[in-house]
Length: 423
Ligand code: AMP
Ligand code: MG
Image (cartoon, rainbow, N blue to C red):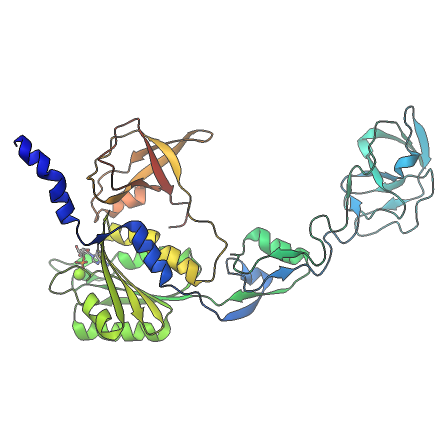
């Protein structure tokens, strides 16, 4: 190779990349084209776990509803506590959690109190059990205490009338606990998104069927199923559709009649049997993008009726990468979720060299490890071909290599996107 050939190399690359859009551009266009569902339903609080809250929740009560003790000990009036020395207090009774001492405290008294027990009227301070000497009906308390110590004020967690949860929040275990602490038995949530998917390809056989010459098992319906399960959507598995115009068209119509989103895999290349694009164009609206990324370069996006359509590539790793980068954020938005943070990224030291061609984004499969608190190392999960699902199974993150990157030496820092149990 002479030097002039080396010089023309970058423009060759540019030529190949014409008509490509960036990952960020594709993400933005897809999000723009994905509208949230509007229908809602009311569910018992436990069933609302993982669903998206449809209305703001305002607290109907104070939580806690009464001022109570944070410790087992003795409730007193701070002004009765000795500045120094020890004072003896008569103990008229006990305030248990759920069985309050309803008589107002008198000057100089100490009411025994348990954690969560309601503070007797007039008492403002709790002295821990470990810091007193109990003798019969009296207790000896020394100095060094602070006015108001060990007391939880009514409404300290949530005040009546305060907005507690915001519509659009994806409800977590803590959230349903908060709802229960308000005494709410039901909660309004967005209806669940319905997502239909099918695989296309004459070569695909389902598990349990024998493989003929040139056949492969359909794995995309399994990875897609798994990734959708994590999103708490209603899943409609439409099986394998053969590479025939009429069958593809029928499947599209079926899916559009039942689903908010349709996901297909395969059939978006420029092969002779790739009917996804033309069918989408015929029945709805179609955008086809070659995205400057690897894997997952060709992605089709559009609408059929009210349904959003994602035509993912056929290669098993491409399906997972494009689902994570494009489909998942769109489905999150469509579910009405406005509160979940974007997937986070971390910086990690590469412990293996990474080969990379410039001009496209690469999502390489990596194995991320924490080496010390806040410090991470990442290595390649092995062969990076877009058909090699094994490396996806061994990986726990994508190593994000931006278009400018020309490769990474061992010891350099890279940005990674942990799977976070999201896919
Ligand atoms: P296509 O986009 O249809 O040309 O498919 C690209 C590659 O992915 C081909 O090698 C297909 O055999 C393979 N492929 C397509 N769909 C699936 C599937 N559902 N499961 C496994 N491999 C698939
Ligand atoms: Mg195919």
